[in-house]
Image (cartoon, rainbow, N blue to C red; front, side, top):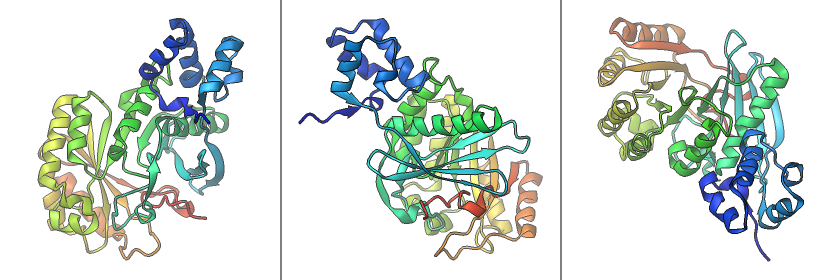
Length: 347
C-alpha cells in the first residue's frame, strides 16, 4: 500500500520538480500553489481550475492534513484560545490576542506538540515533546485564527508570534518553511516585521536564523539576568549560557537590524531584586533591546509566585531610569489558561 505524503509538507520548490516529471506545466503548478497557500483550500476536488486528470493525480499521490477545531474558550478580556486536533489526533493550542483598541490582533501559534525543554515555570514543558509540527500545521493555525478574527471582528490579523507550545528553533526547518509561505506574495503576504519568534535561547540556531536571512523579530525568553538563576529555571541555559546567547543575539541584530526583545517573567523574591535589575541593565547594553516584564501566570504544581505590583513596578522603574525601553504586560487569557506559560491541552 502506498502511503500518501501530506502535500503541505513540501515547499513550493520541492513540489515543482515532482509535478514537472508528471508533465505539469509551470502555470499549473502555480495554480496549485495558489490554491494551497493563498486561498488555503484543503480539498483537491475544490481546485476548480485544475483539470480532472490533474486532480486525480494529486489525490493518488498526496493527502492534505487538516486542522480540526476541538475546543474554543473565550476569556473575560477577549482573548480566545483554540485547541486543534491534528490528523493523528494529537492536539495543539493557539491563541488570538486582541490589542486594547480592538483593531489589532495577534495570533500566538505553536510549533511543536508539547516541548522538550523543561522550564520550571511552564505548563507546556511538563507535557514533554510528542512530535514536531509540519509547516502546514503551523501555517494553518494562522489561517484558522485569522478566519475567526475576520468573521468575528471584521479585522485581519496584524501580528503573528511563535510563542505557543514548543521551542520554534528546535523545529527550525518547518518553522522557516511556514514563515516562507506566510510572507510569500503567493501565500498570505504577511510582513516579516510583523512576525516574532520567541526562543528559550538556542544560540547556534539564532546564528543560523541570521545567516539564512530570516528578518523576523526575535524575543528571548530571558527571565533571569544571571546564569545561576537561569540555570535553576531553564536547564537549556546550562548549554546556552548568557554570554553565548548575547554573542548570538549581537550577530543576529548586526545581520538583520531587526528588533530584539527580552521577555522577563517577574517572580516574587527570586528575580525581582535591584541586583537582578542591575544585571539586566548590563545585558541590555549589547544592542538595542526592549524588555517586556510579564506577570507570572500560575501553573499547577509550580511553586513560583508572581511579583507583587509594587516590586514589579519598582523593578521596571529602575530599568527605565537606566535607559532601558521597558513595558509591563498584564496577563491576557489567564482565566482560560491561555496566558504565557499556561498552554498544556488541559481538559
